Length: 173
Length: 173
Image (cartoon, rainbow over all chains, first blue to last red; front, side, top):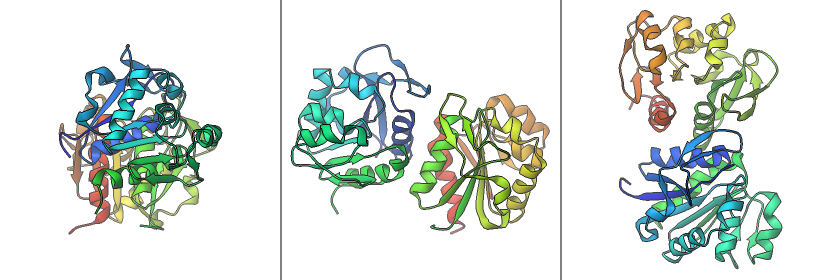
């Protein structure tokens, strides 16, 4: 896994555990995990106050160089989905068939990237209607895998979210 | 792993990720993880503000029924080490040869339980002297395994801490 890069999208008011559990868990599995902000400063705070210094601006990472991108929840995705460069990055990773994962309010980002029509997903109940209106098939399960897309509901589903992401990253078979 | 219980000791001002990463990670591995406070209320807050509702009072758990106990850092261990029932619990788990893990300032608890003489450990630099004075052999490594004892330094070492705990839990061979 060394040298296999996974991007996690961060911004202010990110959901603390939804950034840090995937970050530490994928590091534990041997991936090179990059926390990326769309614009400066690199220092952002979680919704509950956990500090985070991003590793990089997203613009410094080529979407063709990554194995996947993760959109955690909290209020950060409300900011990130407004940035066309973020959406272009997610679309580029998706078009290569690589992992696009989101949890809680994170699926706002793939909604705005326009990649969810006809796909099976879950999320925070708060944005279920947004997913249905985007043409997705919403189900109430801890974590959902549909091809390269992984979604999960809330922080307590992080163990299932991690298992699902690792399964997709390992590839078929 | 279902039905195999691991206790994580919590109190106010716990280090947020040092509680939640082990909790979610061991759940992901199939363990039954119980966050335990020594006394009420069950609701405590992390040093950075992450909320936590403990699953149980420690007094409700028999030390003979668990596969291990974890002492995370932050300022919580400064409180927990004052409680003779906490120290008796840790000693009882240790005497059965089961996992006793601690990270950052968490090793204050096994220090006060009196179980570290001659054992190889690491910790936050802040309490290195306390470990040396307790007769332990302090080394600067991300995570250290000495028999049933696992220690680690700081939050960024959580991936190594988890790998080490899972190795000890899996047993020899």
